[in-house]
Every structure is written in structure tokens, then in C-alpha cells.
Amino acid sequence: MRPFKNYRARYVFEKSSMKNVLLFYCAIFPLLGHAEDALQACQKALSAGDYAQAAKTGKQAGGFNGAMCLGRALQASGDHAGAAAAFAEAEHNAHEPFDRMLAITFLARTSQAAGKVDEAFSHYERSLKIAREQGQKQALMITLNESGQLLQARGDFRAALGHFKEAYSLAANGNERSECNQLIAAAYNQLGDHDKAIEHQLKSVILEESNGDFDHYLNARLELAAIATTAKDYPRAQKELEGSLKQAQSAGSEYWQAKAMLYQGRLERVRGAAGQAQVLFKTALDLANKIGAETLSRQISAELKQQ
Image 1 (tube, rainbow, N blue to C red):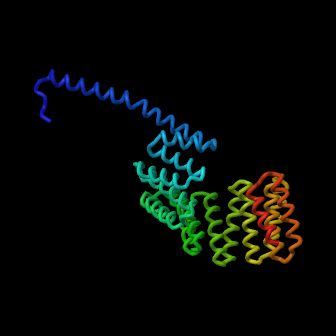
Image 2: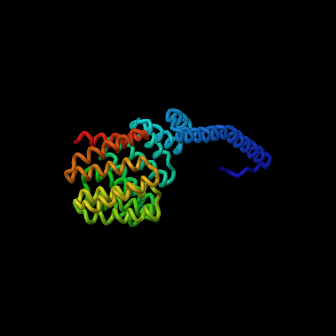
Image 3: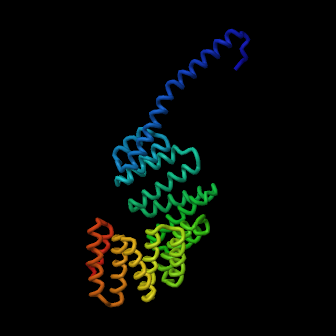
């Protein structure tokens, strides 16, 4: 553009341009404010479990955050196809690598929930690539563990173990190390290396006892008992189950009492005491039904059907 030689003309031009800029911002600010309000409304509705309202306001919010909230709402309501489209839109709208990685990870989870295992794994590989490039250690650990569990579901236990071990090397605290140890233990158990499985599950129990909460600690002990049962180390399994049941009773937790008895019933059944197993399962089912623990009730009922 040629320089202004007429200073009055230059002043008029700048004044006119500033007026246009001010008019532009006056017009856009209400839109930005509306989008922010819609996003907050989406997040609030999502937290409250009102997925229809969350989806509506997430769509209104638009952009990366709006698409992410919309996708989470649709996923929670069981609309896997709609959620996948929303997360794909979020990936398209992402300006930062971390945001792209987040959208792709949710896309992987959605594909997995829809039963599209190969598609999910492909998304996880893209997410892992970004996490490695960006040096995002925690995101890399989480994605390794999630993709490792997908490999487990595909029956590739050796590859899953590799993912879990790499994730363990990135764990930053006791809780993360405990989670990784449990996943490593599960993979070793599936590979038939029960000694290694017990070793890593025991590490998780110790970490949960010092770093975790009561629920995670009891769950880790019960899983240790389950691995010991598979390994036919019945004395260890019985010791862990008796100790877990006592702790659940002392804490007044009927949920964990029922779950401990579920595991005890499984132990008794493999030891050949079918009658004792039946008694334990029925007692556990009564407790689970009493407190409305539907998932646990279904698990116990499935065991009773096997008698």
C-alpha cells in the first residue's frame, strides 16, 4: 500500500478503521459470551447426569471444548456414533497437540465402547505418537495402560504386558505405580506366570495400604486372592480373603463383605467344596441386593448359575 501523502485523509482512514474494529468486537463479544455460557451449562449438565441438556448446550458452545463436552454427553447416553462424530470434530478444532491427543483418546474410547476394537487401537496409536512427540509423560502412561487393556481384550497378552511395563516406568506416584502393578499382574496371570503375577499384585497391595484408600486397598487384596486361587496357592488365597472379610466387617462395609464372600465362594468351588461355595454365594447375594449393588449382584448370580 502506498503511504498517505494527505495527512487529513490518513486520519479519516484510521478513524474509520478503528470504528469498524470497535463495531466488530461489539458484535463478537456477545457471541463469545454466549459460547462460554453454553460451555459452562454443558459441563454443569454433564456433571449432573443430564446428558440431553449437556448435548444441547455442548452443540451450542461449539469449538474444541464444546465438541468435547457434546461427545462426552453422547457417549454417556450410549450414542457411540454421535460421540465419535463429536470427538472427530473436536480433533479438527484443536489448535494444540495436547488437545488433539485428548480428542483422539476419547475417540479411541468411543470406538472401543462400540466394539470397534481395531479402529480403537488405531486411534490409540495416533494418541501415543503425539504423547511421545510432546513428552507428555502422564498422558503417555494413561494411553499405554488403556491401549494395553485393549490388547488384553484381543488376547495379545505379551504385547499388553509390554505396554504396562512401559507405563510403569512413567508412573509418578504410589497410586500410579499401584495401578500399573495390577495391570502387569493381570497380564502375567493371563500368560500363566502366576509367580510374577502374585509378585506384582502384592506390590500393589503394599502401595495401596500406604498410599491408597480403603476401597482400592480391599480390591487389591481380593485380586491377589484371585490370582493365588488361579495359581492353586490356596493357603495364600484363604489368608487374603479372611483378612479382607475381617477388615470389611470392621469398617461396616456390606459391599466389601459381599464381594469378599464372592471371592471366597470361588475359592471353595475350585477346592471342591461346592456346598460351602453355594452358601457363600447366597449370603453374598443377599447383602448385595440389600444395598442395591446391581453390578455385584449380577456377578454373584452368574456364579450361582454355574453350580
